[in-house]
Amino acid sequence: MTSRFIRQLSFFAPAAVMSAWGTVMLHTFAAGRIQELLNPMFRSYVFIAGVILLVLSAIYLFLYEPAANPAPALAPTGRLRQLLRWTVLLLPVVAASVLAPSTLSATTMSNRSAMNSTTGVAAMPTMGNATAADVKQALAADPNQPVPVEVTDLITLARSPDQMKTFVGRKVRTVGFIITAPNAAPKVLRWMMWCCAADAQPVSVELKGPLTGTYKDSEWYEIVGTAEFPSTLGQVSPRIDIDSVKPTTEPDEPYLSP
Amino acid sequence: MFFAAFDLPTAPASSGISWPDLALSFFAIVLEGAPFLLLGAIISGLIDVFLPAGLVKDMLPRSKTQGVFAAMGAGVIFPLCECGAMPIVQRLIRKGVPPAVASTYMLAAPALNPLAMFGTWLAFRNQDPWLMVVLRFGFSVAVLIFLGLWLTGLRPENMLRAETLLGSRQKPELSPNPGLVLAARPGMSLGGLQQFTGAVIRDFTGVLLFLVIGAAAAALFSTGFNRSLLAPIGQSVFFGPLAGILLAQLLCLCSTTDAFIIAAFAPFSVPAKIAFLVAGPLIDLKLYWLYRSTFQPKFVHGLWLRALAATFILTLFYSLKP
Image 1 (cartoon, chains in turn brown, purple):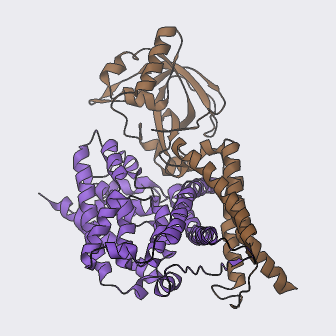
Image 2: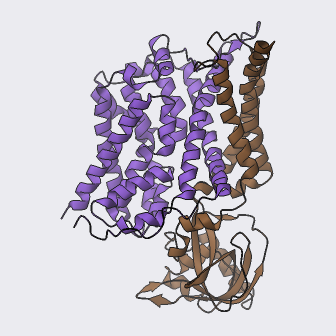
């Protein structure tokens, strides 16, 4: 009875693992959590892989049946070792999908040197065409309204003297986390992702002005202020002179991508 | 000179580990890698069904040394992601491709990937991009030649795991995967479809375990290791390349995007950055476990040692140039 149960379990284990992975992938995609995990160019692959895995598990159940396995239970090809293998394949990914937070914490920020660099990334030499077009449109629409920019836009502008001129003294609006530290200027920070959250690097722009209260590193804030580009020893660094700071919701794309 | 700019680091090795962040990083790595692993398994299944045994071997030069160079060329023309390469390389070995040649291709595909070179140019466009591309490609070729020639001197039974070796020794189309016994239902004789799906399921689930283990190791260090610890030695002639190699082992980045990370790491010298870019695609914590799915542990350790030693020696010589 026990050996028959184990035999059945061994047969269904591969299908269970493939189905679990497929379901986790599809759920992550459908629920929008994929935006917190992967660069946009990889997201559709997760959906496709999820569908294929579910199809594969169905084909497996259709084409195959429980087979005899004469190897001893604890041998590398034995049933118990194999069940342990399937458990390792099943539990971590399901646990991670449940336990993973929506954003990285200050501990990881610190380990990835968030407080030591103003920029954190190699900026584009000029603003991208699409972004530049959006900005032109915003500038033309209402000169008195703050121009929506990302942290990376300000960093890029600091390296592009011609484009920077149009922003000096302009009101800007940006969204990000606020990080503060003793003996250091507060900063607005975003995570920049190349492939996935594991390679995300913090990018930040200095803030100037009154910043009272306590700010949680996992909460989103909207900052409105004046863009400045002070130069120190020939190095231009962007800065926002704060007008207002207020809590806001997580943006559609919590990570920036190049 | 050797110890220029070398101060004992004042930063702790870690600001602590956030376990939720570790879960997030782990989840992101497996979600990114698993689709490519599945793609590799599907290609492997197609190879199993449609590629006649021995055909690729017949197309290769007879000399193993020439075969290594052919494999490096194939790595440029047919680049692969590290995750997707393993099932394909396993299948090629079972179809009669000499293990030395297949292994060289496995190493060359991510290291000489044209997209990786383009990404390097883009990432360093403000920092002498052509120099970085030439150094990355040139040093990678040099290390691959060294590794490939070493591989030609090894016997397959000293390289491959038993299940990989057994399949290639008996019939290339047989593919024993430890413990996954696939018995067809009576009356369900669908020939090619059964062979294809069996190969895909075996190859995917066989390598997936090692991706999970590697992803866990990579997530641990990507979230828990304080990178500024390496900053003080990044400019050192001797320790700079070592720091670059160490960082590459711990961060486990894809070869197509690693240049963007290291380009912004100001404390590192050019040799340190090149060491990072050359060593990373060849082997790191994640790849170590992926390689274990096909190769014996002793061989993987030897590969790890030689790849890093060759990278270090080349970048040290560059670092010492007047």
